[in-house]
Image: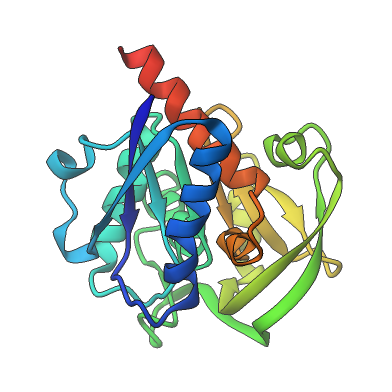
Length: 234
């Protein structure tokens, strides 16, 4: 079985996450006994025609992106077409933005990293930066992420300075977007769309597990969902 994965972001070999992601996909593909190819798709080059070539979409860390609309277009494409999607760090933040803008109708929702003067700072600077930090996360029972981890509490590695502004958390109440992982202070760190084939975002960087030669359960689930999607489409 051969699958192809789009890595949405502006590739920079000096970024640790960008070094780790190909390793993580390679380790996971080996564990699944499949052939997984990757292609870096710059945010300035995103189009529906381009995205339709892939079996899965990963929106990667290292924002601000050169073209925020490109990143949001890729996320929207994955969400609408039931394509397996993983968003880590900056990808997680932009998945929040995409849903707020295109599903909930908050067109002015933005990140202060990209737009410091935004009227709606949905993504704001963290009061305590999580640069090269490890933290505990409690998972919601019966969530997809808890099923992948087979646990209700996990430890993960961060490299981020921005996150969901708690003042706007209420706008997601009753929506399809669920925050299924929270830190010890109850700040959201994982999102998912329960009815989607695989749509998960994490404030942390699961790809870093590959630097320890470990297969991460979320990345395993992501590639497995891509395989299943290809089989169904065949």
